[in-house]
Length: 348
Image (tube, rainbow, N blue to C red; front, side):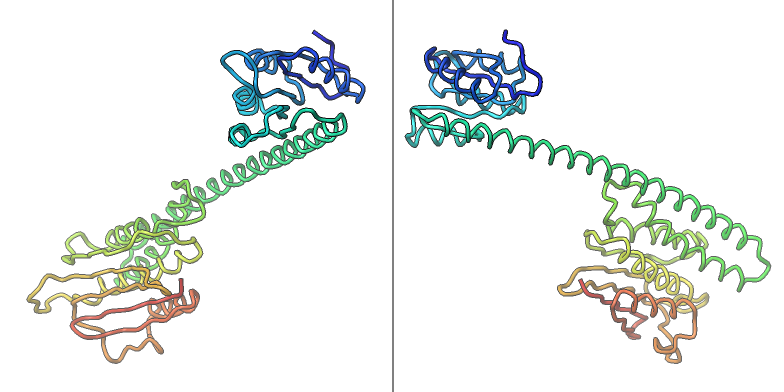
């Protein structure tokens, strides 16, 4: 085996004609390359490439044995990441199309001049150098992105835990409050905290840290809102939510809007002692209707008082809803027939 000179590019030459191998070796040596190996079959080429790990392989296409040059090229480039240039006397469509299928770094027709081979080798080596530099940079970026993703997950985890702690403290304070109004206000704040916490929980638990599954998020908010009301609350909540994904900064205000409207319906739409002929029901719908998303929260309760308007809500909850609708660039309407229905729309 020929010893490799430090600093010189190494070449494996493959051809079933000894004269051509000798000519290539002499030419490459004169050009400053180190021919570290010679093979006369595709199988030997694969074996030597694996052992010697040359910088480039110059290989004939048609050779004896069960592996020809094109097959050997595919194996070497795929498994060893070594560039292969095919040297062949065959320029017909059949050979060229086969070669195209394995993506060699070059395809030179024999007879070829020294200048042609020299130019091809230099271009291929430079191209491979650039490729490896690019791949190294991309791998570095991937590691950086993964590190940042893990850091973000940890941040979301800590925020979620802190918000859950706040939620627990608010719940405890509400339970021990002597004032029903104070307890109700604390429960309202608790619902808002949970709506935000669920975003961070979803971001922490999901592999997708850039978008939130709206259906899963709405179901979590519904569950959280219901948990803030007494178990004997006799109201059926139905969710009809399309499954699609939105960015956290868009989903969070929508989640807070849902929390407020759902809480308001549970708190005010079905007062004790009212006469009813049907099951008390709240319905939540969220769909994409180009060019808008449409959120509807409706109930079959006593209906919203005519004295309450969205322009002058008179309550913190509805004031917050109006502010959040503005934040997402949307609009809100209220219908008072057979209960109350809020319709929130915002652009896709």
